[in-house]
Length: 210
Image (tube, rainbow, N blue to C red; front, side):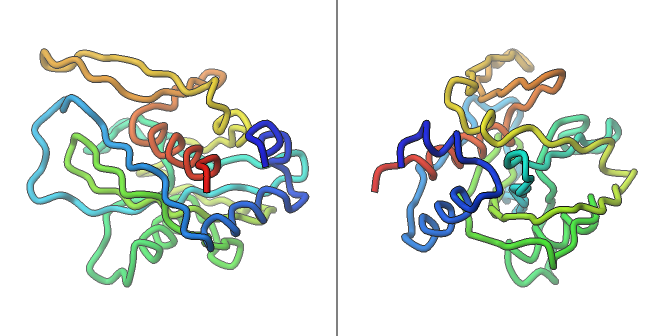
């Protein structure tokens, strides 16, 4: 299926879910994406984390659930992110971490979530090694936000996020170092950094030649 056909079929008709299931079963591997030009010294050892990449199957078109982090957090304050966080010793797997964090942060019920598979680990310049867990989520959603960690949630269209025309390379100088990163501005939201990088990875996963 061509990229244009996939983008036009990101709805609840079953086309996109079927494509995702087939590609994960086939073991398609997207090339790893890593942030470049460290903005600060990397942590040692790396902090293992996992995020849920929750594709919401709306009748009007598939969306992606994203969070706006609160401004007072130690890591990535105020940034747009997937539900997720650090792996705990009690978590049996990155999938378990992603499900736990999604329940704690936004109240996503595990019964509504179909985990499809993993994207390549994402290594941030701040010392996190993140495992993205792609999942389908069946509405309706009854979200309950953790006010300490999550300021807001929103759902941009998956078609917009997957469209390569919307994948921008931006630069920012921090502590004398110029850093280049992915960004996908949408309406008044600035999706960038690790979140945008993992979305680029999802694009590569969907459209890589087999």
